[in-house]
Amino acid sequence: MNKKTKFYFIAPVFLIVAIFLVIKIWPKTDSGEMSTELNPTLGSIQTIISTTGTVLPKNRLEIKPPVNGRIESVLVKEGQSVKAGEALAWMSSTERAALLDAAQGQGEEKLKYWQEAYKPIALLAPIDGEVIVATTQPGQTISTSDAVIVLSDQLIVRAQVDETDIGKIKLNQKATVSLDAYPDTEIEATVGHIYYESKTVNNVTIYEVDLIPQKVLAFFRSGMNVTIDFIENSRENALLIPLEAVHKEGEESFVILKKSADQEEVKQVIKVGIADDENMEILSGLSINDRVVVKEKKYVLPKSSTGTNPFMPSRNKKEAKSQ
Image 1 (tube, rainbow, N blue to C red):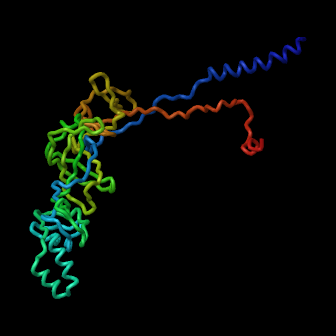
Image 2 (image 1 turned 45 degrees about the vertical axis):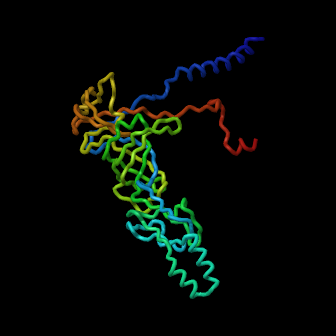
Image 3 (image 1 turned 90 degrees about the vertical axis):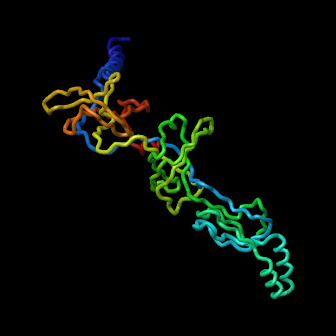
């Protein structure tokens, strides 16, 4: 191999090595932090305990017949409010039903006689309430174990609270509930009863808690699933800053302040209160006029993982498809 041939062989190799070294030592894109400044704000903040539950009657009362027989008429429908002592349905005993059936073949006069002589039985409402089940139809035979009408005195929400949170729930505590069927409607409620006996659901120990809605809307139905937010702590006119502005160093909380445009940033120790998903309550160490520095990481575009050579001439899409 002559000198000229060696030169042509070594030159491309040297060029490739040089390009590789340039790529390796070339300064990388800055992926540091960017800063913004803001003032604390006054607002409301609260901490919540979230769980799920079900709409249920506080007291569910089944109206059953005193004897076996047949339903003659039902006077109420589901969703209707009734008063104690009001007739809900009329029924015939088995004997009366048999007599009336036999009298129908003997003429109108005979049927009327037995209807007057052998009175039907009234099923009465024992309490004031709302009809939540009324599916029995006239002519249907019934026994003493059948519920003809079901009443509810009041619809409530029964929540399932994990044992780790039950100590934070108190009587008359405020909460908000929203039905899964109507998620945009929130109803205020209060804790009415905390059950003493636990239950195990999916290997988790829970306690049931009854919530009394301040208003039972027309679309409430027994058995509906609900989401419940118990309000653990609540503050009004609290001094708030974003969570990302608060830094921790051991047991100490602090923020970064900028006193003025030409001054350096300084560390300011603060005392914090409650926090939600976005903000932290500041109890002391800050005023509403302070300029708090919030540092955020810059967004860096992800590197390409296609493995293509950046020095290779690119082809347009039409040329690529044609090949």
